[in-house]
Image (cartoon, rainbow, N blue to C red; front, side, top):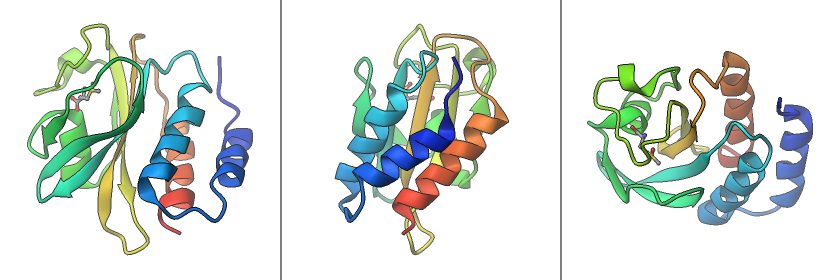
Length: 150
Ligand code: SME
């Protein structure tokens, strides 16, 4: 299954029109993205709640770790560096945090607000190895920018 990112972006934009509350936006993005593709087994946000710390936000899938320091894991790397983390094999990523032992690959994108500050990360985990492409990263980055940087 391949995501129709044009339709997904339009749906999310329509559902969130006029909304500025970050948690409401995160919940809506999570729901729409999670159900757009069978590759996505865990989909959700971690929020920057204090310096160098991420806390769980809206998500779909099995329970996630509640806190992730910037120094740890794929999510921490995305928050620390502000760079997209496309991990084809989580076992090859030093310090990967295994919230679910079934996870084989993941894509984590930093989320910026309108002031250019990192407010959190958007994490998608797959039980399939090498599930994510640069096309996924680019399309999802564009959606996040459209929704959270406005
Ligand atoms: N695997 C992530 C942790 C988050 S969960 O899998 C939901 C990481 O290493 O950042």
